[in-house]
Length: 90
Image (tube, rainbow, N blue to C red; front, side, top):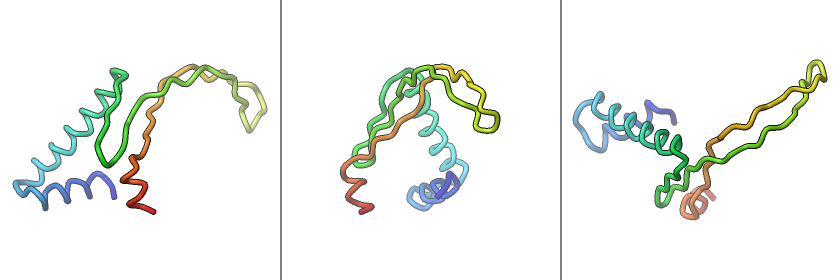
């Protein structure tokens, strides 16, 4: 399923117009992203927890040339599935 699939599900469930369903899905994604940008967690009961993890700087190796490459420190998104989601997909 992709974003358009989610829009279709929201449209079928709530009715209205497809553009309003798409706005709803977009605003949900924007809310999650903006909360993660602040360094906070987003916890959705029954689904899981979205969080941000700090990854330290490191030296990697270019597989083609073998030369060392510096990879800077960065924040990366992380998702931990809830127990209910794990059980549902078993």
